[in-house]
Length: 251
Image 1 (cartoon, helix red, strand yellow):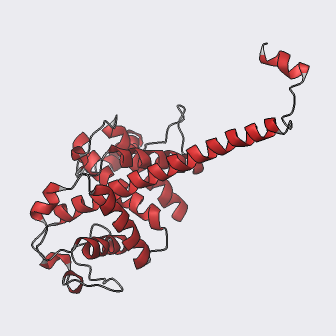
Image 2 (image 1 turned 30 degrees about the horizontal axis):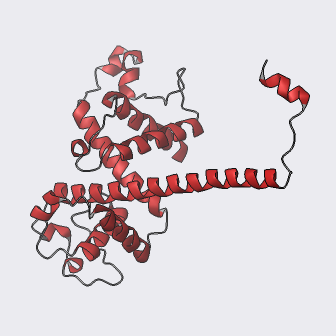
Image 3 (image 1 turned 60 degrees about the horizontal axis):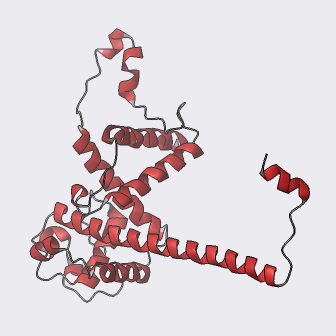
């Protein structure tokens, strides 16, 4: 059932967050993604938890997985259950960074994965990065890699296939002026880690642009309210405060 799957997935990701603890500052810690995207994803999880009514007594998302109910299972049944892996704080953070990166990327496009829109956002991201170039990527990227064309292709394939099948996907761009578009990334002299880090850097810059646009819109809204108030004052249209309201402010 979709609802049950959504709840179990949300609690599992919330468990990762509990294990991570405080998301400190820094970029290199999360392979170029940065903590702002992690914090964005954390807020999204909190919102989804409230929507699904998965909130604990502290108003935090429920973070329950099978291990939390192990002691409640009869001993006879418990003996047949084995723990296959145990994740430490660093491993949980790496997994959560992957989730955050792909979630933030998908949030920019929704169901509209139009090539033109992908190119536009990549172009903005590359422009944002000009003052802070990724020296590591420049040192290891394939010689045939064209930043505008192949960065766009990278994001398109990721949106379609996810990180799991990224190296083998062969989805082309609608108009591709690059040799890379005719082959899977697996045939390039690169690795999944290198490509994933490239994605993280692009997503980080997209997120920074989004924050700047939101802040700019907020300032314009605030300025508009102030201007509207001054206009009302000049036209003597500001409603006078009643004596009752004035007294209430000082009670």
